[in-house]
Length: 218
Image 1: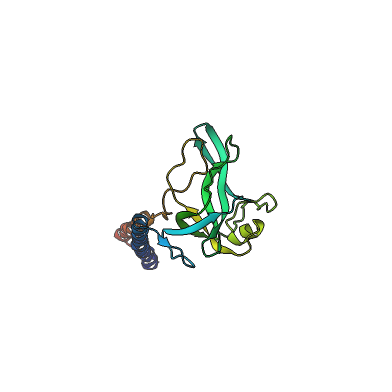
Image 2: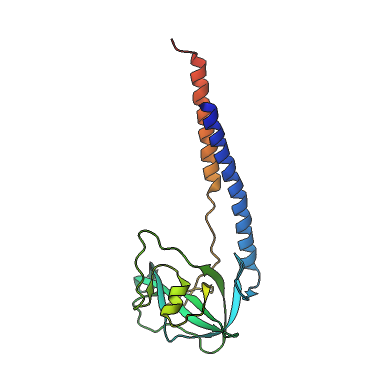
């Protein structure tokens, strides 16, 4: 039994080491993409890429995504991310996450007019969880990222199957929305997990050695 458990624990520890190496390579790709110039958006963007697209915003209807509390210059505020349709130069429609904005504000949102270039990264659809709040299509309020449903609610049925999360500097005080600063980075906790599994293997061997030294019981 000890041998079987030891094989399992060492296997789990080795698997976490391999996951750590894979995750470090992924994080290196993300860091390289973040430091490099953005690549033009063609069709479906590659993973971990900073992309750029030109066109004009269609601000007639804006959707809200998520619910997040932040501390602003005027105090703590509940807010959401602003999803705005964007018409590309080639005529295609893209949904852009322009950033977080408080639900209650005293000045209107900043919105570029005319042709602009937006730099960001692609975020694809999420699946709703067991406890996800229900989307309110009529109010254009979404809690699950679903570009197809968002596009239909905004009257843009041909929107791309992903949302472009805009990157930019921090918004000035009282100006919204506040865009994302960096590309997303997945957590890398695999070293801790590997140490845990290898530590359990050492503890198992220690307990077995103590048991073996006592000899067979009568």
